[in-house]
Length: 611
Image (cartoon, rainbow, N blue to C red; front, side):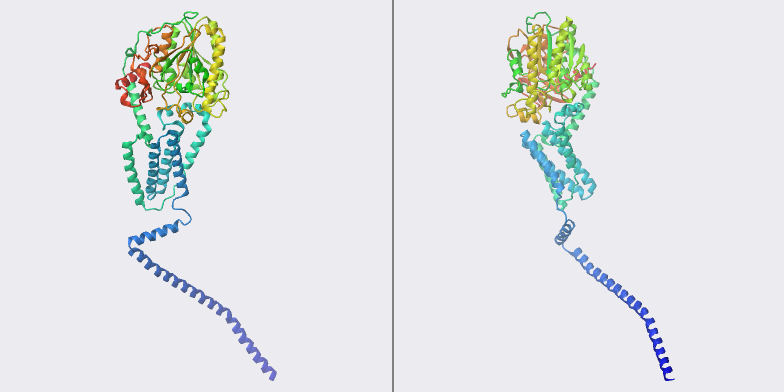
């Protein structure tokens, strides 16, 4: 019995334990719930406390004086750009690049005004950008990239071309392959300009009022500088000038179309006979006319003896000094001299009388030697000149797929020998290409060959000398006249300036005195000073020397009259809408020195030569 009772107690105890054990999970869940609720309460309390703390700060900021607010804003800006600089490194790169090329342009041109005006424009570009950035970041970046590109492009063109972007450059873009001599440099410069100009602009953290002060002050200073300096020293103003030139040219074209001028205004009964013809083995000697690409007289006379052969022949020929080009560039230069007139557009056809048409009427076979046979545009141009035949050389190892000067002179000799077999006098005209701006030569080099400018002129002189050596050994020498000249003067680009500027200062990049001499077997040397007269006189001079006269519409007259010009055209340089005068060998680009009536006559000539 005792044991039984004891067992019952034990069972009761077990039951109680089980009950307690069953209650433990419930208690844990309750504790967990209470803990979570407590945590939430703490978080809510902290949030409330935080909000309460912030509210007074906001009130304090609103009630803080302006000076303290600026300090708070500044500290906030510093926090915002803690991983960046106030002025972005990219901004610095853009500014420094523009400043560097501006300094280079000023040094090369020896013109500090480019630096002054350029630096001011750089500052204004970035000040305006900063102002726009406050309103619209995308618009600011576009504005900065476009203006920065335009500025850099103008300055780089100034460095390489000695002038800002012009109509002459734009109208000669079709012949851009002619610049292949420095293509790698030009392409590299273009890529660098684009990449740097497109770098993202980073906003400056200074007060916007600073930008406004810079803009107002900058515009005021620039206005004052415009009143003192020449506006042409401003890179960005150059675009305005270009647009203005386009508008002027458009008006010019309109005036030409509406012009009812009569060509008899320019009619001449014949060529004035100033000089008696020398004696030749026949009454009609052959004539070889050589146009060398871009050659100024200073290169021939240079003390470094760059062109000894041309110089030697000048000293034993009838040599004209103080003789200038009347236009620029090649297309205008060649046709302008052959027709003794001006050319409006590169590919315009002149329907008036030319030296080749007069020679043809006097029994001559006329031939033009095309040294650019793979240049379709130049070939079309040559075929419109009115020669009996246009002969294209088959070998083209020169730059831009042209005949090298070596090949050109070899072909000239071959064609002259061929034409001697037809029992008629001939008139051959040739234009050599190898001295074009930017080119080097694969043949003869000057000195150590490191200067491409000296190389190309030395090479053409060497090839001319070799041709003359063969010419004087042949039967051609007995009855052939050599007329040596150029299509226009040398273009004064970066290479030209660095090579010649210390010995020959140029006042205009596309106008200069240039060589012209007449040579044959029985020639007597004579230097004839023409005192600023120009290449409009080439055709009448050659015809005068041959004692050939015919009705014509020439604007120039024979140079054998010396300094006695027959017309004002003979001192007038005109290309595109650019006018200059060369009277007394003084170059003037002042438009006031160019007679307004003469301008009107040039427009009349444009109209009648295309009729």
